[in-house]
Image 1: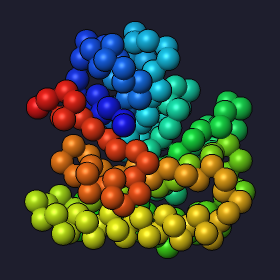
Image 2 (image 1 turned 60 degrees about the vertical axis):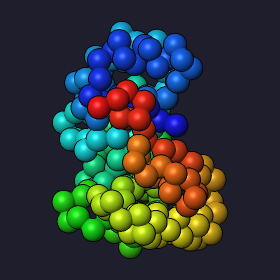
Image 3 (image 1 turned 180 degrees about the vertical axis):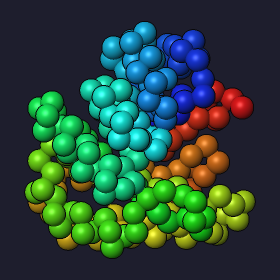
Image 4 (image 1 turned 120 degrees about the vertical axis):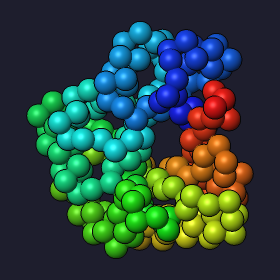
Length: 197
């Protein structure tokens, strides 16, 4: 369970930490860097927002996982930063599965092209996929979205057995995580259900 703390102050994160939560996610680089400085050092930090390439230095030194790599340009810049700083970044490829055109992410074919060329990214460790379902109350639509990404995840693992660390599927949030768990989620991103509205 990834506690999405992006809208909440450090005090709220400390309460969740004292209750035993250790994995937290942020989406704004400045907030991310500030919280890393003042909160316990054994927190595992994930970055889940759209990451601008001019903000990499605020995120990559501290993130154990960047869940939201959504463009080839961002991936190239993470590789470039990693080479310059002798750092390997664990990432998830964000896949666009929802109905909304405004959602970020790769089409499945684009993700496959990247993974066929994974050796071009020695400073990136491909850990899996991330996706967001269509924003709807219709659970059958959400179920279909998660079934699609689950099927694609299995296909990728069969196609690229050499990617041994490719084992994470981050799908599901506060409103739909139970459906995500039925479709192979290894991570769920929970914000309001932990921290309240």
